[in-house]
Image (cartoon, rainbow, N blue to C red; front, side, top):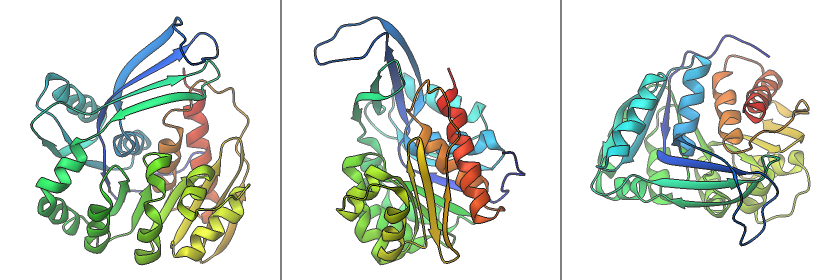
Length: 287
């Protein structure tokens, strides 16, 4: 599906990391030492969403932090070259954050290790600056849960436009429950993350999305891999099946889905869900 992208700018708050993705030549098991292929690139949930928004033609800016090492400027340059406003990326003492991800040949994640401290340091040392940026932002705001919960709470209080919360990992998803019930943001999660938020065992996206809406989300969107995705808001429940695709890599697909939702704000609810699934499908099929 193609559409005219939303022109409302989006401020993405969260991690910017040096991302290494390694894909093995055959299925991994503990202790393996296998050939494969590897690539390094800018990463982090907020940064990935900002990049995808810019690629879709939606203005995006990133509020994040990097270190004072050589890789920091490389990360900033790479995002700016692809249209992301990095004027709100802070340089802090120490090394830039890194994530290493291992995938099987079918694109499914085997393991990931994240060293993401800089965004927490930023929240502790420059909290007032973050809030100042949010208060003066006229547009949508998306926050990944690498930002500490107390800082996410402050952002939700300060934002003048709509806020979307996205988890940065399954471990951090459970932290979103109190933020959703207190502030009523939009939340975009996969089914595993939804169950972590809800402390539940839903087996499909629709009941999980409805439960998140009942918890207090103004809009809840839940994906479930190759199975049906669901969106729930005041207009009702909307469901859509993703197109079949030969998966090359799953890393970042959820971030592209979230960007697809934000880029399609000018469409109907069902069309937004279809557009977001199409964005994720394109990413899954990329080499």
